[in-house]
Amino acid sequence: MDYFMQLFGGVSVGRAAVIVAALVFIYSCYRKVAEYFKNKAAQDVRKDDEFREVIDQVRQYPQWHQQSLDIRKELSGAIEGLNEKMDSMSKSLADIRRDSQETHATTCRYRILRFDDEVRHGEHHSKEHFDQILDDITSYELYCKDHPDYKNNRAVMAIGNIKRVYQQCCTDGTFL
Image (cartoon, rainbow, N blue to C red; front, side, top):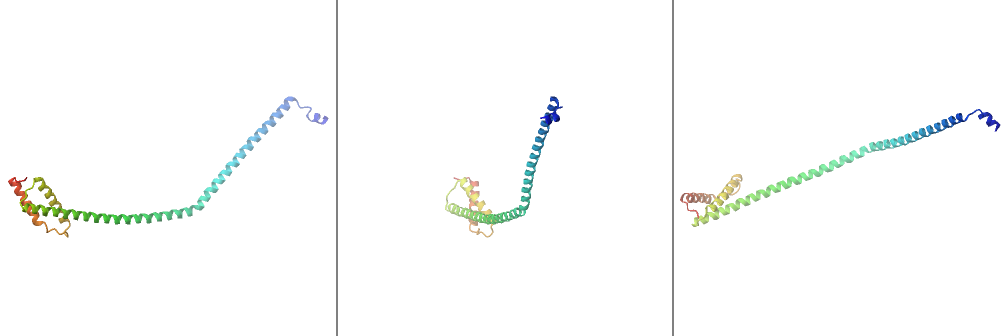
């Protein structure tokens, strides 16, 4: 104890309080600095992990690029197949439309010929009936004009007769 007294005997309470306060301050600073370096180390680890992840992605880029090229090639092939199917469907629709127009023209011709037979047998018709058959004649003649291969000489005389009778009915006022 004598040794302790010799060593610290001249220390006053105020001086001891300053030393204790200094030690507490140094300890607090140490804790703050230690926490800062601990957080900094954790951030560095996260950054290193993110950097490794980016490098791994860069290493996988050629594989991903090749997958992208393969997908594009597949899509291009699929689109080309769809284009071929669309062309085929367009041709089919054109054929159907052509067949439908020909069927319509043939039906018009049939009605024209039948109407001509009725007129030749002395049947009277209303103006509306004549107007309808004249619409059929217009459709038939347009189709024949646009399709020179279609056999259209079968109704030429009947059309001429119907138009002549129509003109006569207009002049005489003899519609039903």
